[in-house]
Image (cartoon, rainbow, N blue to C red; front, side, top):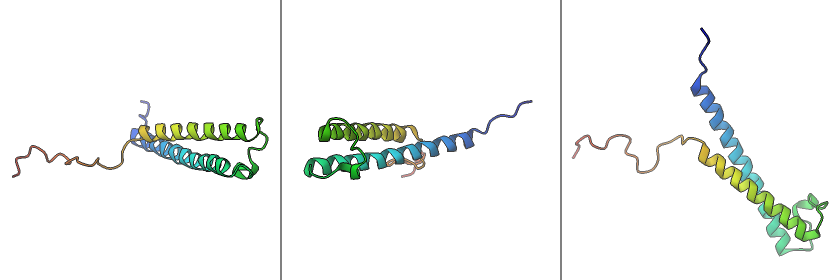
Length: 103
């Protein structure tokens, strides 16, 4: 008889993957947004320490690329956040005590 997969272990691995994807999305969003803000406020400096210097279009092309990267990372992190299951009870959840007749 074939062995049944352990669904709890698979769920925990999936939950950890979503948490990692959410964290990576937040970090990339923060770095790209910082580069966009820095590039807009001080156009004489290189955004993100010159990492995006090879992008055609000059400063405008660099800002469009960094903004797009920030937007994609934000959407990806948000998607991962909504996919993982909550580890704690939600606020306002009485934990099943409603309707027991306690006064």
